[in-house]
Image (cartoon, rainbow, N blue to C red; front, side, top):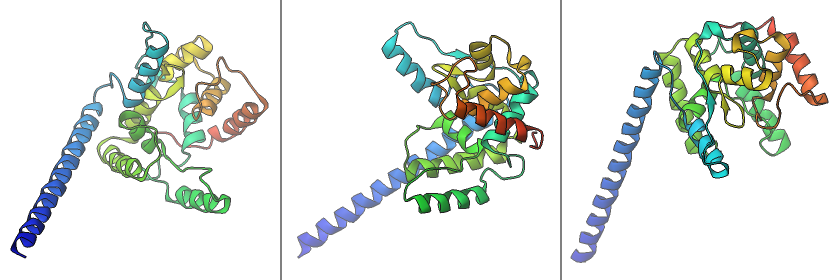
Length: 238
């Protein structure tokens, strides 16, 4: 009996140490994330989690591959692209605190009707959190971490800086990251020179950027471009 109690005590002690180590590890991870968020409030990211994975993928195909990425400040990104991305990705961007609860409710209801996940409700802030730090896997743990980082971004950065970061690190092609590289890769112009239709096309391909190049207009893309062009004038941007 005494030996059984001793084993039980050792078990609970070991479990306590394990839980404590997990809590400490989780806390240190949050400090690491937050330190990067504070750094990127003033400085441009040299790389992101999504960029690193894209480069690894490119290197498996070509050992000499390099990413196309060039940071440009907010004012050197066409206002048309700023409007198009907000219209396409997060029309209430300047109003919410990082989470669009109305859109989340609508997405939950639609997914419930369909019996599967057919739509999400990620805001630009949430997408930035994922692009900067996380993987593309679908799990509750990753979504929870995404929510924490989104909270950090919204509490530490202005909406203008969040959009500036997002436009500079979003993927717009195979190994193509940021508005400047995207504009030059797809249209041969700098990001500042993008017109309304070019900007709308770039906004349309954001969910699947590796499939299209050079402004190619399928019937579906044409329809989406027209929809975004109609919405661009009404959205607010920082």
